[in-house]
Picture 1 (cartoon, rainbow, N blue to C red):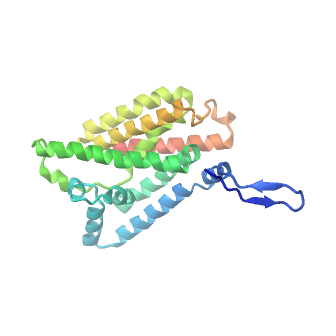
Picture 2: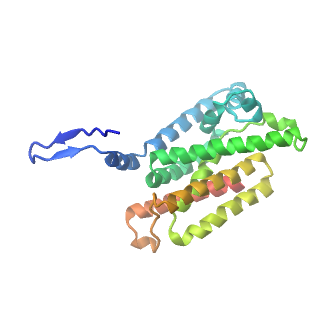
Length: 256
């Protein structure tokens, strides 16, 4: 593979500055293009759905849903379109700001490409695994066939995968607690909620934990520093605030 560099000469100093992939990655982690781009699309879709009449709104959600009916009829585009629809506008007002914090931390620590990969692994992977389980249950008469048409949209599977993956970046003293607490809360959500969405949350957390463990064990990610917050640099303090906001979103989705 040939890497092309675009030199830029500084007439005063005679230096040649090169644009490198490393520079692009650092710039991306400062500008957070995936975070802001995805948030803008979510806001636009939320406004459009909220502005529509009830019949149109129901139709939009139904066509974007990853329920069994759509998947079995080959509407695989719903695996992606469902990630751009967030229930009602009131829910979106709470979810989107917290989601921005989660995505910002993921993009700062993982980079844009890994953020997308982990999010999609959780969103698509959990959806397909849960769908397979539901199909098996329906065919054996364990659950009603009505579940095949239940609306299933939102960002929670992808978000929970990212939260699980943060095991690679949390301070070392919090790592064991992170590994234990999130699956435990997800199981509590399954017991309290008893829906296939709750099962999907558990699956997506596990997917994220596996991704984070791989990043941590391969040394591809640097963990946050622990210690007193007053002794940390401002960038580290920002990351801790973003992590706390992401945790609030996670617990809200699992138990709320």
